Image (cartoon, rainbow, N blue to C red):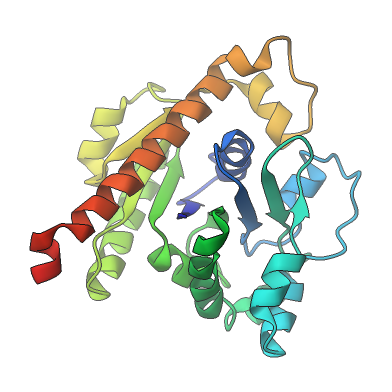
Length: 262
């Protein structure tokens, strides 16, 4: 069981689309949580094209926590995503609710770790970093946080600052810096090795820049013919494998005798 957080430094690099795309191609059952504090569900409005009304979501989880029913609500509130092994916990309905989530993040992080017995992984869309209500405790409790970014100079400038902030945050907790970059559109114009050098972070994978294919996830567009064999789905599967490999390697390192003695 793993908890993976996707967040962005600036702009709209495609964190939500990437999170949904990964969830829909994940090999194991997975819970997708919209923890973006900007409000409204981009997935219900986009992928589901507004056809499903939001009846339950993250704010209901916060209320359940206040009543001591967090674990029970975490099992009951998510909605299954048809034709997949993924389920969705939609985000808050309005940005004005973001402040109400401050007391939820830390107990939610602990509750998500408790899902290990269910065999279900968790992918969290944390939205843009630095906003009021940002789910920072989920980031620092994750098995891997992915800084989702484009590969241009503007994206690099914004991500560099946040890479330093995230590394410092993990250091203050005495934990390894479990943060890497996820590129959307490598080579536009910089390659992964250039990004890694500037950020001081590994690049776990790169997703193909294919707007028509991304619209399947972001706008509910009809999949083109032989969609699974196209560039974006292939890159999502490759990213999933790279993420799983990275988390497994970190777990092996933490379990090594040298790490246990330290």
